[in-house]
Length: 400
Image (cartoon, rainbow, N blue to C red; front, side):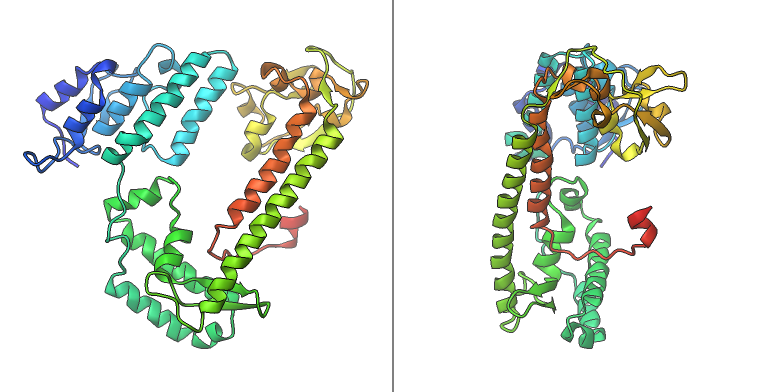
């Protein structure tokens, strides 16, 4: 990371959209035989004057972020929606960008063409040749335990030798957590750690823990008892623990197949039950006086958007991205399909909300398949979780 000089800054500020080609990106960030060091690093930074790109405020930015915005947000349609993105492009921040764009499209502030442009441009920047040039790589530094790390691991194994032998899950999880915490602190000093910090698929808790540290607590499918396995794939699996390692693989494949079957059956039940449920005419109102008295949890903000609540004066208010913040964290009277009085199998638009109408979805019962698909995806993702998580739960947490 370095501060750019005036000539370099001027060169970047003079770039137009069509100037930023694969060839130019390579000329900026690639090493060659004649040039062992690249001209720029994506983390090199400079002071960007106001309104130089995407109506930005004056301040410091990086070369990578400037090119990202020049390619994506610096145009008449997207600048008012996205502005200048001056934060690290992590998985979480990228999802926020997609959310802003999706909400803008839903509100007819941008067009399909704009959405295609966003998707295509992010794919171009995040994949193919660009990924090879710009993304951090896995290196031997990430795949090698330093001596102090090995020492800590052996000390913990010796300290809790009896508990490990007894298959104590709580102690196994405690050892895991201490090793993982140490690993995150140690490896985060390297630039390669961006593979994990970005949230781009690689998961230290799962992948690196099993690869470098220990398999950890696992249910032995032969004895139906818990064991704490000390082996890892990098050092090799001990002959004593090999049967349990192998059994976990077989059990995992079976559980995954069972999850797919259960998820598929759940989807079919939803379809059979709700396939004829449809949205009534736009603007229809069954006139029901009943409602859900609920707490509008900020976590479920997206789920409540575009539904109707009953104000103190009895009028309906449609929750939109602009006004929903006024009601988050409060109790509201929500119109719901649960209390719709419309002639079955129709549900009126006031109980349903405007979301299906804006999406042009008539047979809303078929959208219930999302419930089964979500449960299925959760089940399949759980198959990949190799770390044990411990939680303290009070009775109030379960029953409020």
